[in-house]
Length: 218
Image (cartoon, rainbow, N blue to C red):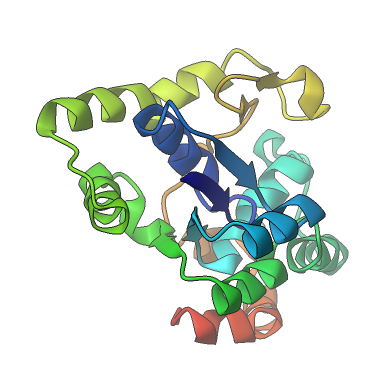
């Protein structure tokens, strides 16, 4: 068995990848945000690959990405339509992975974890893994994994770096945690309602209408 963790960016995928690689330390756990050539060839040629994915309200994903891309934490940048369009295009394009993710869900029987349910609920993650992989994760292991992979632990790693860019200089290679990886709200759901200006809320919602409908976001 091999495990592929394939999800759009900024959807909790790094958390899930870190938990997976600790549970299944003896096998390959490959992380990707797109259906690149390696992923497509592997899925076509190996029926023993298990695919685990994460999905998040794309409006929250958009905000999470923009906070990093435009360094919104420093208060010197504002959200305008140009920045929104650039970010939406990236998320829906190859780099962001949302459109590839829709295709992935149509071609493979993958486990899809909802960000809004996995956020600060590690038992949800462990319970879904138990069902999908037909394994048992006892309470002792659950506590250990949560302590190693919770927001506090990952934020401690992220705080070693001052910023996000350039990412190759601001990332922990073992965990793939980078500078500014975790927001000031600790990744709390529904923050798009507070971040996206009121005049753009309907515009952004319309841009992600298909994804919102497919994954039943309101």
